[in-house]
Image (cartoon, rainbow, N blue to C red; front, side, top):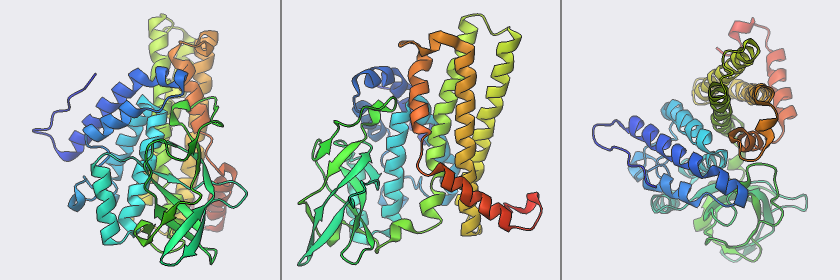
Length: 380
């Protein structure tokens, strides 16, 4: 099934939001089947390409819509949340695509940037794979003017389907180098360990890069550019936006269930819905503020990182609260396969488990405690 998005008479932002709504609707219709089969959302990604979303993060000069520019943050938030509402797995994959192209646009040399922009225009899916095993992860060894890779990346979302992954690899001097590796579909991916409770369609497996040779044309920026702040930590607002979409999907399903079962007049149910509505709106407001602060060049780096770290915890709490209200309101039926809330709950529970939540909250609290001004001055 194809959805046609009107192109004429629309501003760029309206067109992208309409495209995201169309993709979200189609993704939602396929999500249960993909979850049951643990299948990659290839049709959803193809829809993103067809409707211009894969190219959208590129600068205008390279054929995109500059969705990654600071002034476009409110639109990017809406796009990410819409895709997350339709399918958290797709939202996760698209957020990785956006992140990778942001790093390419910021740090790659002009020839590399132009080549990779062409790949995105042609429909290649990008991603950022940084997680690695305790054995040392990915390593670069010099061989003349080229380098040989050894090692692997784990929890690589879209393994076997992301054909332009941006990865970090340890150079001989110990520093981390970003590079984008050209892969074919199905190459080097091991999905045998991906037996997750939720987010099954994200196919987050292990990818072994051993014996693969790359040259300077694969390098993105200088060593350790990947860890530059505030982008490294501040960019977390984007996955919060995807999580927001998943939270809204659970909330909307709860409301629909209560209306369809004619329990929407019950005072206890209305109380839970009211509390869930507060959590949803809190999450949206906090993510919007985090996006604004993270993209404001006048905000100090420490301040931006602290706020985004607080947003991470706030969105997680909102998600857990909405899940609890939905499960208590719907009851046992919501835990049975076939009920819309069952898969939505599993996907959200898994995606809320982002790395280092305690550290993020601790860093934010440290910033707050180090400031002597009143509360209303913390973020201004």
